[in-house]
Image 1 (cartoon, rainbow, N blue to C red):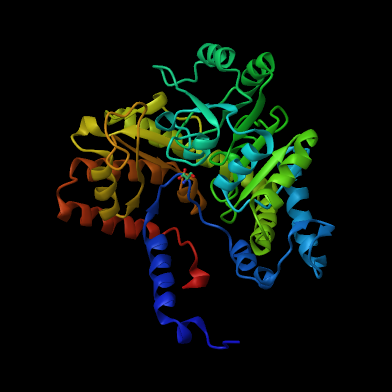
Image 2 (image 1 turned 135 degrees about the vertical axis):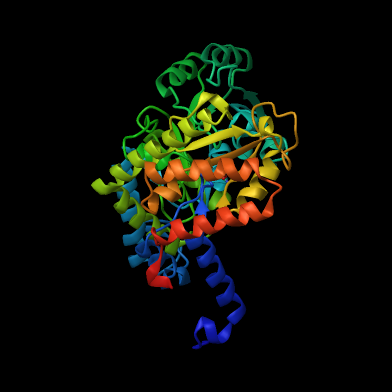
Length: 415
Ligand code: DSN
């Protein structure tokens, strides 16, 4: 076995990690799907649990030597059940896309219909975008938000009655409003559809009681664990007991092989963190910070998609300011503020050069930033956008960003 340190054996990778650490420390991370995990989560991720194969489930593995793996996986399951009030939990999906795909394979036959949100209105690629393989196998019909940015439930009901979907799917990647799960469940019941929610973005807010929880209402709920939930990169499926066998079989052996047990242990730790009272405060602050950004961007004359935000993110059309989402992303990058270019509903532009930018507050809130910093950051974002062709100005903003980040150190232990 190689006994050299990473620095001695592979200085190129060591350097890349060091530079990425500096980038995370010295930048303002505003991609709404990103966050910073705790040292405890990092420790489990980098642990010897990565060495172990454990196909199967707790107490029913295809390999020997799984007694400690079982302890970690059972803790992850029990804590997830407690956090969300779930009847059954599968913590093995490698990430959000595999979790969604496993659900489709568990519950659908080729050609079956799924009613899901259009990508440009905030949906996700795995909710049936034509570029995905799932769209070749299943029949995805896509609904949209209405002119005031709400999910039009009358239209959703009419589409459900027309298309008779096997699954009605809600839960989004760029949608900033609350979701009325009870009403959607009533529509699904009327047409005999299974209800599925993908809460990847808002799982942490739901776990903290800061957004409606679909888990007690819906049949199936998928999530990632690394966004507002602030755990390791990974996925999870929660469902009613009657779907448990089909879901488990679809994840393994249907779709995946050996689970990543270092990752599952890290999920268990993140769930323990999310059960702490301080996580509720964290989730509240995420929303308060997003509301502060909302007020500032509205005051500066930006067009906010869906009229504003109820959660952690904002989707903003920047074309009224004379640039594209791509140009805004690049300018903000130079200024040390990371966001992502994003389509707006029915965007006339292309996905690689869309009209909008999407940004949010989970990562900045983890650093301890509050309303005061949000006000400052919103001003700097506006300044960067308005001066997107002025590199000198952007670098001046970056220097201010670096000074601010020094007051909110992220991983001093890793320096
Ligand atoms: N890539 C994630 C996001 O940024 O929302 C969704 O998969």
